[in-house]
Amino acid sequence: MTLLEVMVGIVILIVVLLALTISLVYFYRTNRYSIEQSSAVTSSQRGMDRVIRTIRESAYSSQGAFPIVSIGANEFVFFADVDVDPLIEKVHYFISGTNLIEGIVNTTGDPPAYTGAEATSIVSDFVRNIAQSVSTFRYYDGTGAEITNYAEWAKVRLVQVNIVVDVDPNKLPNQLTLRSSAGIRNLK
Image (tube, rainbow, N blue to C red; front, side, top):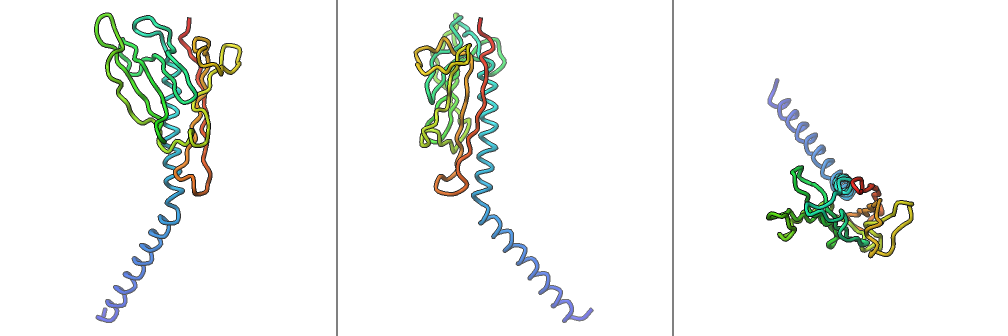
């Protein structure tokens, strides 16, 4: 093999690697939004599963209080066992900006009381419910009628959760709405 053949081989290798690198960069630039939207939807699906699973585990509080504390279009407060211990936690789901937040208050003392600080974590990001005027939570009674008077929280038997996901509302594709529901299982 001559020096000229080696040089030609190196040049061809460099051209192929350069073309491959440029192609990958172009792919990621043109598909960045789609990849981000896909990631946001996947994250929101996991968050939705977590919310639904927690709602299904609603239970009477460690003090014996009714499982539901309060309801609202974008806020839901109830009792559930989220960490598989003998005590029941107070769970608070709400929208803050473009995030669906979960707040948890653990019981303290004997007898148990829910007086500690709420520990919050983001369940889903890029949530556009408020901007799109979509209620995050919808409530139904035992007959399937929707509850619109939020003072009637004791009648709730089914909760529907809606999450509108959109990384950038100014770009296509439009938002995706995830919807699921959970029945409150542990009511007497």
